[in-house]
Image (cartoon, rainbow, N blue to C red):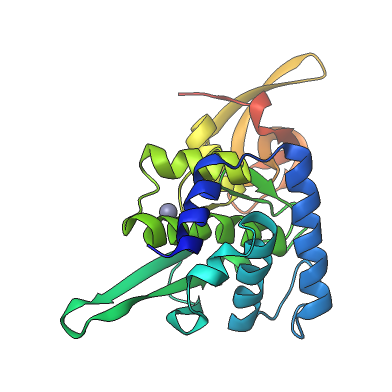
Length: 256
Ligand SMILES: [Zn+2]
């Protein structure tokens, strides 16, 4: 094992960052992205290039891994790609080996762009990644990248990696504060289904100004839009009249 890889292993096994430290490092990384990338002009970017993923890789390496990724892994052996085909997963890290020809292993980090671009189209279009609610595309991309970097370091050091097992989860928590370990980008609707069992079309009960009301969930962003039958309300295409309420998800109770 290369000495730099041994040092990387020590960093990965032992480093722990505080919330404050992470906030500072992540801000530094984001600021640097805007200064360095010719494509990135705003946090809700509309244009992303594979070289931006490489840049993120380098910045994360410098700030979280003491530059040891770049000194352990020849730049020719790692590539970066944007993928339009992955729809649920935020990213994917792959290792290729060719033992017959005794070539060194090659690595690739692919980042899914479809859901990134579909999200954050409106102020309340939040997305949850690795347990963090992200306010914009760059934040979501950074959380995805952090997850993929844990895969990469595991593959480099131990030749295997799985986010379903404890070693991965321990590293992701200590280094990046991740509390969830899936590849997915979760939209508010996904979170509503997972945490509250509520989806568009669900019948729900809630309190509004001391009155208990019942209605149907029409739409979910940060809050749910609930339509309540009301003779004074707006006419809808189903022939009924409804009044709209915007209710935080945790205030809703699903009605069987
Ligand atoms: Zn994973």
